[in-house]
Length: 394
Image 1 (cartoon, rainbow, N blue to C red):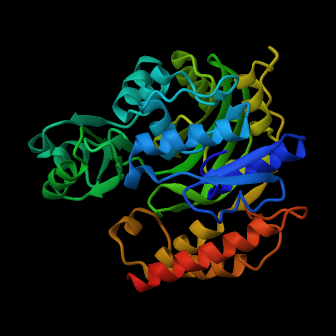
Image 2: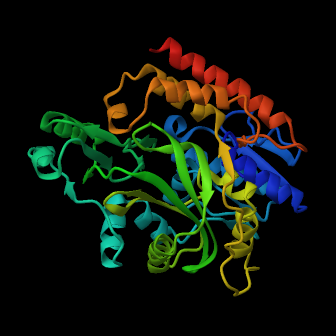
Image 3: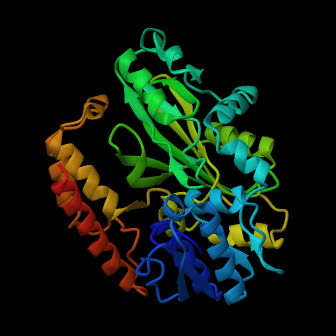
C-alpha cells in the first residue's frame, strides 16, 4: 500500500487488516498515518518522484514488493500510479499491480480525452476550449465568461528530466491571466466555463467496465473553497442519472479497479468536473458508511469478484472530515483574502461555526477509530504543523 500519509490509504489498511490480510505500507517518509496503524505489519520508503525521478520511485516500490513477497501492490495516488505505469514497471512473479489497463489509465488521466469521451457518451460537460498555444487563450473570457477555469490536461506529467511534475487547476478573470496560466502549465490546457453548484462524487469499483460497487457523497467543504478536494462531506442516496453517467465512462474505458467521477450539481443541472482513475481522498467516508471499497478492489484485481448486482448498500447521511484540509478551509474562510472565495457564498461566521464543529461529536474524523488510535495522533501533529506553516507563509 503506497502513499501511506493519506487518509485513503489508512482506510484501506484498516479494512483489509480487519479482514485478516497482512498489509505493508510505504511512502516517501517514515512516519505516516497508515504506517502507524495497528493493522500495518511493516513500513518501507521510496524516493519522491518529483525529486528523484519516476524511475527511482518505481524501482523502489517494486523492490519493496519483492522483499515482502506481496500478492498485490495498491498505488493510492497519481504520485505512484504514474511512475509505475510510465516506466512499465514489472511486478515480481505472483504480484499484481492494482491499476486499470495502462491505456485506460492514460486516457482517464487526460482531462481533454475525458471531456471528449464524456460528450460521446452523452455525459454533460461545461462549455470549454482546448488550448495548446497560449495566444489562443486570448478572448476566452468573452467566449466562456469570467472567471475561466484553467485545467492543465494532466495533473501529473513526467518532465524531460524524468521527474514528476504537477499541473494545478486555477482561475483566470482576465485574458492576460488566462494566457499566463497556459504558459505556466507547459502543456495543453482545457479552458472551461465556471459551473457553479455543489460538488458530488460517485465512487466506484468496476470489473472490466461493469460496476461492482457504487457510493455517492456530497461535498460540504472544499479546498480551495471554490472547488477541490473535500475537507468535509456526507453520503447521499445514489442519484440514478449521475450513476449512469459515471458507469458509462468506466464502461467505455473497460475499467477495472477504483475510480471517482466528480460532478457539480447546480441551477443549470449536473456537469462533469473530473474523472480520477484511482482511490479517492474521501474514501474513509465510503468505508465508514459501509461500502467495502477495499474488499471489492482486492477481489476484482485478484479475480475473486463474482458476477452479481452492484453493491450500493451503504448508509446515507454519514459525515466525515479530513482534519488537515478542514483547518485549511477554516483559515481560507476566515481570511477571505483570495478572489476564488468570491465564487462561493461564505462568510467568516461559517469559519467560526466550523471551528465549533471541530469539538462537536458525531461529525466523523477520517483518522479516528476506536480500535486504532495512533493514526489520529500522528494526523493531528501533521495537521497542526501544516496549519502553522500556512500561517508563517502568509
